[in-house]
Amino acid sequence: MTKYQQYWQERKPRPPKHQVHPIWAGIGIILIILTPILAYASTLVVLMENARRRWFAIPPDMIAPGADPYLYVKIILTVFFIIVFSAIFMFITFVLYSLFGPSRYGPLDVEPTSYRGPRYRR
Image 1: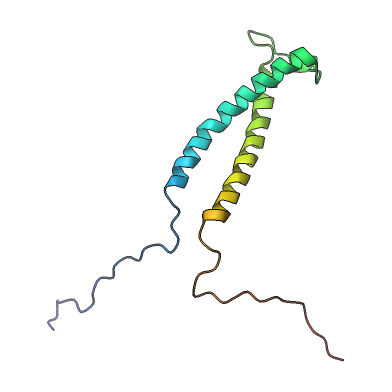
Image 2: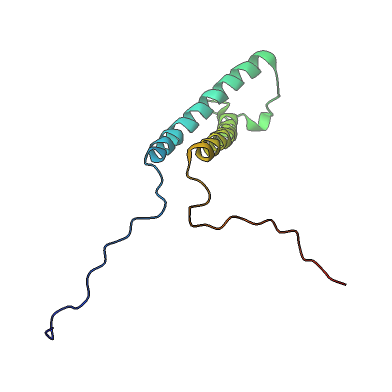
């Protein structure tokens, strides 16, 4: 072997152990776009039904001057519905991932043991 010749081989990069299926990225983008649209539509429906059935009273401090007097109410209800719909979609995603996702333990993992606490001898 000469002085300037390499004596080691380049390693090939290892593929990652667990890869998330690319469809989940597409579903995430759809949910990012769909959630605020559904929340705003739900806000409009709730405000229309509230005008008809008087479910809750809107305080006068929340009525904004200008073209849309219920702007603050719409913002608050839209944020509330975004949180609710995100929680629902998250729950559905978790259930689907637990049903169709990879198993928790691989073939080289040791079976989990049940631990009952320390045993004291007298």
